[in-house]
Image (cartoon, rainbow, N blue to C red; front, side):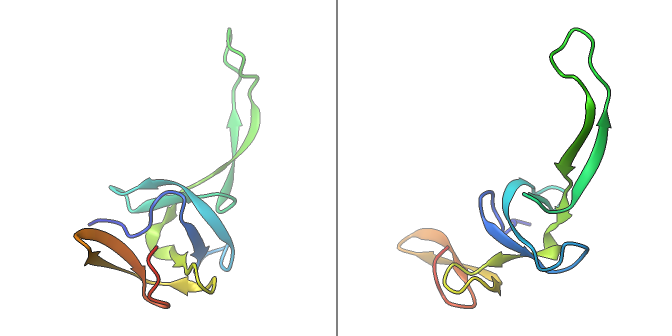
Length: 104
């Protein structure tokens, strides 16, 4: 199934501990139906230093994946959550915000 959310889209978290927060999509894993959103679902990871490397190790905070069903695309017109529909216009497949009818 093709995901309707892509990298660099602005999304709103609609469920979970970060409900109501918005962020930019950093990465999409279509095979797992997961997205990585900046500032959302932050996890703490303890990293060991690697000998002979410039990486010192320590505690690192990074984004963990969120299931695509828990986020909704933000409508470019009014900033609220919207669903996405695809249409063919002028021979090109485009994404349409259902809420406002705007091309994304």
